[in-house]
Amino acid sequence: MRAFVVKEHAHPSKISVAFDFPQPTPQRPDEVLVDVFSAGLNFFDLLQAQGKYQNQPPMPFVLGSEFAGLVASNSPIPKGCPFKPGDRVLGGGQGAFGETVAVPWKNLLPLPDNLSFDQAAGLFVTWPTSYEALVGRAELKPGEWVLVTASAGGVGIAAVQLAKALGAKVIAAAGSQAKLDISKRYGGADFCIDYTKPGWQNEVLNITGGKGVDVIYDPVGMIRDSLKCIAWKGRALVVGFAAGQIEKLPLNLVLLKNISIVGIHWGAYSKKEPQRAVVVWKELFELLASERVKPVVYSQIYPLERLADGLVAIEKRQTWGKAVVRIRDEATGQKAKL
Ligand SMILES: NC(=O)c1ccc[n+]([C@@H]2O[C@H](COP(=O)([O-])OP(=O)(O)OC[C@H]3O[C@@H](n4cnc5c(N)ncnc54)[C@H](OP(=O)(O)O)[C@@H]3O)[C@@H](O)[C@H]2O)c1
Image (cartoon, rainbow, N blue to C red; front, side, top):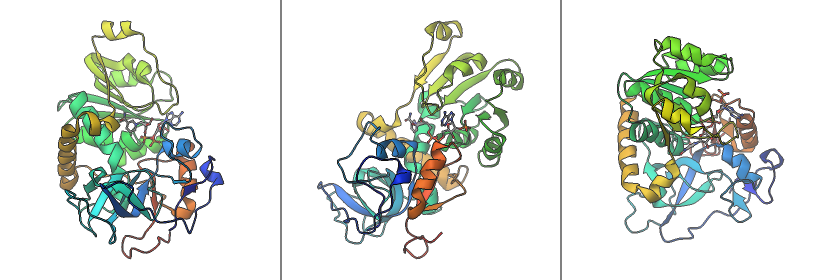
């Protein structure tokens, strides 16, 4: 099969697509085969290709970790698995940048009819992270103010849309006018702020009438900067460190401002709280079906042969929404031509 195979650790720009890599076979009794149509790109794919990520499969391995596609016609169907060959699914598992992937069936979800494979390819991680962060962890209430940093990014744009759908007033903060325009057009943000400008927190305070924001959603590592404009009893969500530094915070700020610092680790829910993950997906699917929220796909969709360009665009901070590689064409099921 065609696949983006890592045979030795290297930057993805140094790796070319293999055309004759063996199809995967299920290695465990709970695994099914999925024909991948589209797959989501993540920053950690860059790290994994170079051997710099916490999870490193044995070589050679197919890169990629989230996808949308069809349960393969030759897939085994394990006992208890609710899917059958031909079902539209989205899911997560190593090897998404190949024509077929083998994954435990519990890593799959039914793909809503109103979403394309491109739209669904990057849903598996970003959307439940943002939903649980806002709903389960920050306990966001209608009418509250939310500040989202990196508001045009994968988790950020989902957070902007979800906070709006939950009745909040949203201030989007990003690093360029183009990304602020995306936050407004695709996210529906109420206000947009360029956080590269010194003193941007004063703008937040002005917008909120001096009160500050009730919830900070931060995937960048900007909690300390953002606390300058948090409200009394505010909640600051630690989502990620896209800027590359793990932030440190003087705890006297937490005391003086009477606030909470709240973490979210969505990847651990399947082990720690699987019943909550079921509820999160049910509520998310309802929102997606209502079309009050809609996945945002980066305008450049990459064919497998140009996957490395997509990863480099993420590395250079050029993408917005979810960058996606299209492996098969949705209409024909054949190799995608872009
Ligand atoms: N906690 C969880 O469970 C969870 C789940 C999913 C993801 N995450 C984390 O959330 C973070 C964002 O993920 P994502 O998928 O939204 O990524 P993404 O789409 O690549 O967006 C990241 C954004 O961060 C901003 N940024 C600021 N400084 C940056 C820098 N020095 N280098 C690169 N980007 C920088 C950029 O926006 P501007 O150009 O506008 O500044 C960039 O577009 C990652 O750290 C990821 O690991 C956490």
